[in-house]
Length: 345
Image (tube, rainbow, N blue to C red; front, side, top):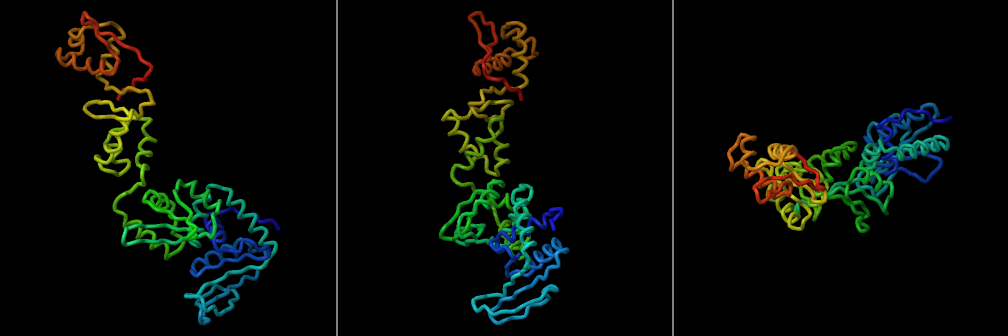
């Protein structure tokens, strides 16, 4: 019997749960282990619905240090066992069926290769293998995803969301720090499937006070967007940093020749030097347009623009500094045509 269903976000979340804490090697049963019963119930109900035509006989196994009886364990046959190592009861959901297991694994592979389900898969995987750590000494907040060894699929998913991470052999986990990463994972509601992790995640996330970037990250992010002109204020708002901090990035880059700044209506606009652009105001554009028609003296410009001689001369000198105009020995201004593109703001 071929499994024909509409894949929902809930099913994709169950795939994430199973990849985290299911038995992925066996060919004869679908299992899922966790100490959070709402997760076990969620997974069990989804599998039951998926294979409702298979006449399955699902079971729940409960392990605890004192063979505790759990309340309301669905309508499945429940077996209780002692595990003296268990600090709290944990549950194993199990369905034995070679055919259902085969169909389940086909479904898992299909969902794993569909990027639109990455959010749901990661949410399920974190519910199973994720944990949150906070340090009061350094006010550090860490998201961890436990894995005994590097997992290429999880790395692909994290890369898909632009999350920076490193794998710690000592912690046997993927370690994720930095508010910029928390922002991305909060947007996809990473921890919302697990009730305890959800509450802790949002408490920790809401305790962030200021965005801290790792070394050179702010500089690199600023450079990424300066193919277009931005003011210092616009950069400050975009990256949630003070004007002084943004200036600490911009000024050294200008000295290195990486950036240029252009004054337009008393405001500095920054852009990368390799963009080959010159930024001017609409007023200066009028002077350039006028020079297309005829070369002029400063007096002629003043009369045409309706301003005093001093004002016209100031605009023309500013254009001269940009190598867009020049003046001859007779006091006549001419336009210079450069390879750089003139951008009018």
